Length: 634
Image 1 (cartoon, helix red, strand yellow):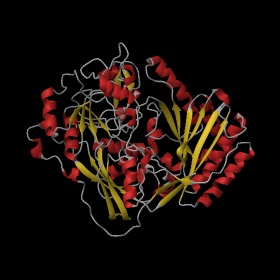
Image 2 (cartoon, one colour):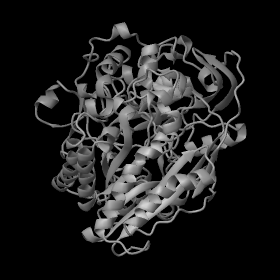
Image 3 (spheres, rainbow, N blue to C red):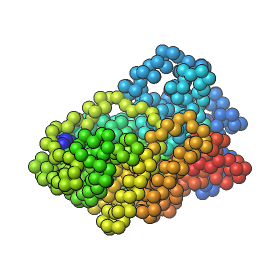
Image 4 (cartoon, rainbow, N blue to C red):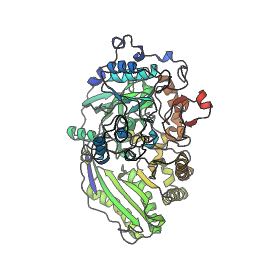
């Protein structure tokens, strides 16, 4: 067992108004714009139609007649104070060409993975295939290797002020450019990539302010103002410094206050305090017209609704949040594991007993979440090891604010049931956990190229005996097909979420008992379009079995298949209609596009190789290019 300690101070009640961060006070003015009309503000009333202006069917990209000339990019850079970065793929140093650098390539191949190189790189994303996988390190030393721009952004604005974000948004809108938003690069489906794009990089918006007295609406207590670029591990340091608890993502280098909250945001405390989207009390955001606004329970309330769970990269560029903080919370965790076949280190077990144990664990999951717990920190992984006769299962069961004795007694009935069917599982003695933030030590993640699908399994699937049997069979068959199952028990109901409520979180989250992913760790790199399509078809077939036994449920926007069928319902449920109206109200130009975000059906990516990547021009769905039959990737 492990003890995870996260603390907060008690609450003093008073009403104070806090100013924005200093970087938010630096905003674009008419004097800054001068005669540089490309960075001028616009008005929603000036948009030509609900689907945007009619200047061009497609966003401009290098080679099109209206792509800005070098002189205009230089002028933009001067307006930004030198914050414009050329979007060079990191591995370009390994290929013949203007960026060739053998020493830099050697570092990239052998040392970069142990540093923060990729986290702090302006264009790297950690799932490479949606970019097009056009410039990979391992191929740079091979004869005939080729590195192209692909869907890496052409230019990046290293945003450290609101003014710079406003300039970037205005320039992209006025010059008809594709705009993408990137924070730390934890992007699985291509939302931070875009062919021919200008990127806004919010990674360095890391300001923090503890608010010992904060009141808004019915909330009266302690809070924190957090910059959009803060990573989870950095937030844990603030929790320790200010003796307070805040919800953040479990991945230590994930940006805690960007897309994580926008997509809902689950954590180890989801059953106790709700989702990340439930924590926001006020949001600062640059909208598509270039204006800097506040969205909270009293102003821009529809935008406040959408930004909390309605999907990232589609309503604006968030610069900071004010979030709730919580009382001292100690989380005790108990690890269990059992195996079948060649790695059966827990004692005698066959496949039949393994799956019985799998069923027992999921039956016990209801008790975990009903006690405010989750099961996920070391993760609940089930995978096939060697054929269909060897499997492994590991999980952590966590409860907040309980004693070691309580947790031991809580877990023991499950352990007894597992022992009774022949699985040698023990109820371990807890020990202090390593500090969460120190697990990263300031290092980062490395790019990969896997795919997966997700499902928000309803509690109902685990209460009706026949439905439970069908659910477990669907999961088992997907594992036996060679995929890895990753399940996180949680119960983020509206009751535990509390004030301010009324947000755009997928309604399926409120009924869920497990958020589950099905991973395909196949080597996707280098596949032909036909092989890539066949690989995905197999994964989709396994996911279809999940969908068949959970009709009307949903999937997690932040961890999903970009080709999820009926994605509007799967990611947003009954909220979609309202969200689309909000999207079109605040962004009638379609400035903010990303795959499977609200309103993205108005646009398509045209890829000549028929791959579901972002490596192609972005065009309107009714454009002549689309009608000519190019591949459509929404």
